[in-house]
Length: 457
Image 1 (cartoon, rainbow, N blue to C red):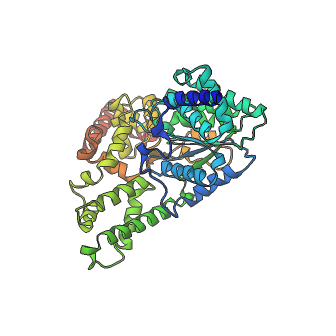
Image 2: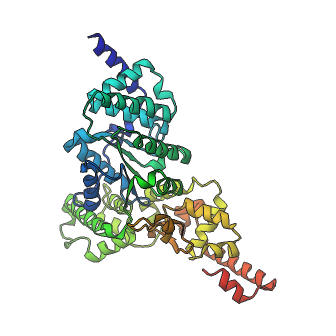
Image 3: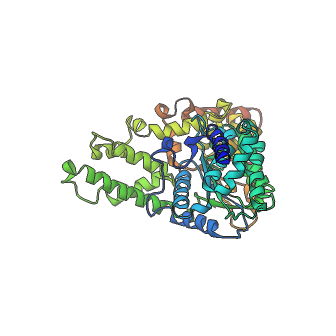
């Protein structure tokens, strides 16, 4: 009885210092976004195959993709499958969320994971409890101390006692939403350290946008040799087909819910042509499709009129896409020098090369490179289209590249002052600046041939 009391005290102390809202089944996240039935089947199958492999060549699986492609939905679906069907392999989950208290704090990550490991593996929980009993302040320590004393050492003790541990899988979603880039890189360094520790059977499933500092961690040692990568932006992933199915099924639901005044509307509604247009406009973004459906299915509104707003230019579109615009604004607001950010975004709208941005817009080439790295989750650079072979560094840092916006909705956002606000790009003003720069350099004696050779769009 005394030992049970001590265990209760140890884990109870840990329970008070974790981010309950970051766990996959928390009330704070309810209802969680997850994959629509029949979508993302290829990605889910590949992830489950990796989980079921008793001796995988990689201990880390990184799911990456641009904003809104459905990374969190895939992670939620995997967490639910593990918990329901493979509970002995579910180690714990942490869903980061920028600006949400507790859920954007990397210092709560390993304590939260340790508590879940303790709950789902009682033998391991005994050792985690003892660690907390010895030092109840562990959750306030640095991330490396928490990982060592709350997870690594207890697992070592559990392993030496011949307790069977079936390779628990830890899910970390939205790493890019942890409060700063240094903390994100620290988490990855500690993940690398833990999988490199002998007799520690942990595996990590991590999802994030491919921010350049996260990307650099994964393509550099030691993670490069122990990480499998899945891109949700890969054209072969079937994203457009999945979005089409999602839209079609959800429009059917909207029709049925509103059948009392849509009974005379010919089905299928909307037409195949409209669905195709929405799929094109989504540009691989499930969040775009979700935003459209939420607006069209809004209570006390006529779905037909709501759909017309989506399909027609006009001021009401800013209302329809307010949630999507908020996501773009949050991302852009993280850059510390808004003036250079606006200049590079304006250059991209005019399909300028980095050299042209320097020449015509006067942006320092190093600053252009920094901004483009910052925008890596919103723009497409052919250096980021990684092949399946091992030539990743060449693809990442090759000299030649074509840069464009990943999503049509982001381009539309930047071109609409009512939506973009301080990030609005006035293309007429940019063109005027280009013309002035060109005339100035011509006036200084720079030949048109030299200009076109060095500063092409």
